[in-house]
Each structure stands twice: as structure tokens, then as C-alpha cells.
Image (cartoon, rainbow, N blue to C red; front, side, top):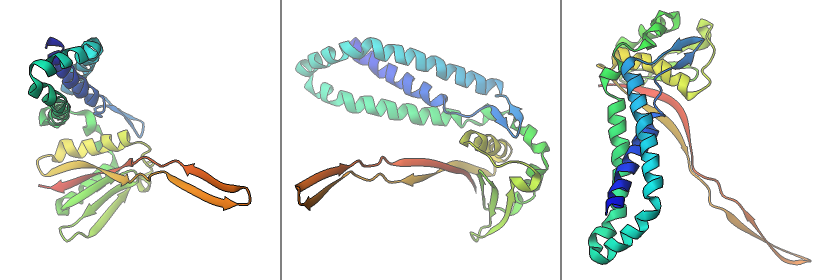
Length: 233
């Protein structure tokens, strides 16, 4: 029974910790280094610790888990059948809890993204925010949308002698400036392009040599990051 409990706790810590590594708290954009705040650094350190402990727990309890589960199956079948759905629920819970913790406003207090506010590009972009019902931070620039769903302004990085952003991390750092300064007015979320996967196909051809059958491999579903969308609360 103890190994079943260890696995539940370990999976929670592993999933929570792994997700914290995906949080963008520091980096470099347009040659400007943005370090994490003390609370962001502590959050990621805690996540890394959780991930290591969780991984060790999964490895240690992995093999004994099945023996313990089969024992439980004979003793209390209902609990045994519920165990794996509970295990999945624990992992999902870790995702939501980590996301909630990562979005805490106090993590952004004193965030160094504010150094981007000195850039002429950011200053020009901020002039459009008052009239924006939403705005989109992307690789090429920032688009501002009115409450009638009309794009009334686009500020492009290249117009201010800044290069286009190359990675999702760089876009996250720019978006982080607006999250820090305007989180009381706008909510934000990452936008992804979902490309459905295609199943493999069997191709049959009939020729002089008889019937030939060939198979084409399918493609997996792809999820490509596009931008951050800010919507007025």
C-alpha cells in the first residue's frame, strides 16, 4: 500500500516540477538580459527540487507498484480499479496547481521585464492600449484590436530597428512586460495553431507483376506557438 501512495505523491511532484521548467522567467531579447525576480527564481528552484524528488520516487516505487496493486486487487478490488484513474487525476491536478501558482501576481512583483519599457517601440505600443479591447504580441510585432473587432494599429519591431523575435521564449519575455504592467486590466493566454495528424494509408496497385501493397506513414498532431493574446477584463 505504501508504494501506491508513494507513486501518487511522486507523480504529482514530477508533473508539477516538470511544468515549472517551462515557465519563462528570464532570458535575453534584443540583446537585453532579463533576470528572474527573487520569487520567480525561488519558484523555479522549488519546481526543480520537486521534479528530482518525484523522479526518484517514480523510479523507486515503479516496480513494487504492480505487486502492491495486484495485492490490492484481491483485497479491495474497487480501490484497485480506481487507482489508475486517480493517478491520472493527480497528474491533471498538478498541472492546474502549477499553472495557478505560476500566474500569481506576486511572482511578477519587481519583475525586470520593466527595462523593456525604455524602448521607443514599447512606448509607442503603449499609446494604443487605452483604446484596445485586446492586443496580440507575436513574432513580428503587436496588433491592437478595438471592441468592434477591428485591427486599428500594428506596431512592427522592424520599424524601430529591432529584429523580429525568433523563439517563443522571446515572445514570452515581451508579453511579460505587458503582463506585469497591465495584469489589472487584461488577462492573457498563449495562442497555438493546432494541425491535426493524418492516419497512415494503405496503397494497393495492380500491375503486370501482380498486386503490390504499400503503406504510407501518418503524421502526428502538431501544436505550433503563434502569439500571446491579451483581452480586456
